[in-house]
Image 1: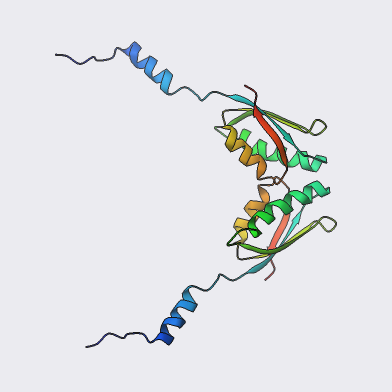
Image 2 (image 1 turned 120 degrees about the vertical axis):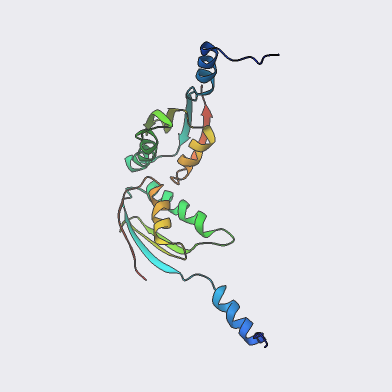
Length: 98
Length: 98
């Protein structure tokens, strides 16, 4: 009787599966923004999630004209929505695109 | 040898001392707000701290013209500052008035 001892190749497979980075998603939010001060506030909040050693937001755009905030990141949708809501801005709608 | 057993009057004193509400303070923040959307965002964040069963903010005003946010509440200064900063608005300065 002998237990299966994984070969190095098996270990590599296990590690790469369990330790791989979480998948990034694309999100879109319709946010009421009436001036550059409004969009600037959203920008600053997202910048804080992006410009850190282990960012949960990889990229984003804040479009005042279209009233749209687009985000690409590993951050879960609900966490991102909560962050945007904490700006006090009215979030009309939000969705996961990809 | 007999331990001191508090009289009802003593118990009342103990309870009223240990269970009294925390003292309310007055705070003032100079916040960059460029439109009613900006001041409305601050208003919504403070409203959430006021309109709850056990509010930590008792009263507040948001003055767009003067760029001032005045708050009366039991909330500690640092907690309130953190809440306002999460709006993404630039807080130029803040102080405890009373």
